[in-house]
Image (tube, rainbow, N blue to C red; front, side, top):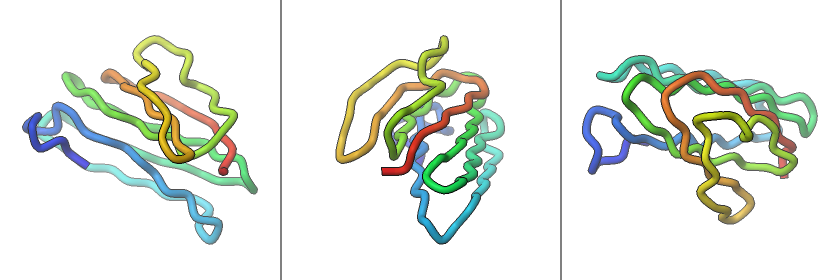
Length: 102
């Protein structure tokens, strides 16, 4: 979702839902700042999630799970927790997270 107060996808949110019935999902969008990407693949309760944040953009990333790996790298900053999700602010770049579905 774009942040309407930050035009041209300068800020946006990536907030996946990982249903049991779907094994993988990929989304790409060519924004005015460049490609936004989100791809996840589930294997049982384990999920691998790869995201792309274009140049000069910031994403709020909401991870729906526990045992999160990949959030301890430069460009990723913890923001808070809410209802079974952990939120991060993510700078431009490519990132990979892994987590356990709740």
